[in-house]
Length: 221
Image (cartoon, rainbow, N blue to C red; front, side):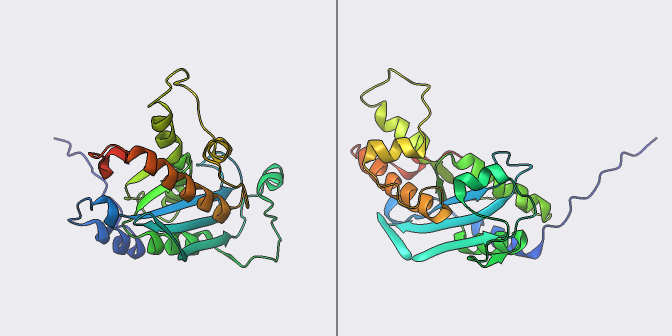
């Protein structure tokens, strides 16, 4: 009788083990105690598998307060270059204005910064995908963090009073206009993270009018 061969799952790298250990036995905190990390990536394009991150910007948010003293910003060496994308984010391959790190260094530092926090982004699935494919290239599994999306959450607030366009997708510029948020530093990772953090707080203030509102209601995973 032929015995089937089962390949052994590769051991995750040590940096990922340290990151993953923070989730062991954890339950959801109360809303006011929850630590959120609002983040954004600038990339060489819109294909999470093929494109690469150029920069990551992230801010800590806790108790309805954005902590500017607890922030994260890195620029990444460009192994993939897309000239068309430069017109959007302005990050040049040989720009000496920013100190750049390798993709591996950026991912390790990002995981150390976020810990087990809840991730927040605008159309966050793409940014998470960019990080997950970078992790895959390092032989590591995907991000374990809970996450939410300001685009999805904003649609919920709009639909409280208006359901005439259920298929509309709200861009970050739409949120800036609708919520009266300045577009300063738009299309820079840290700038977009800050804009998203402001939008998140304004959206939460609308959703929290329901006194029974719970943290789990905004999570998408």
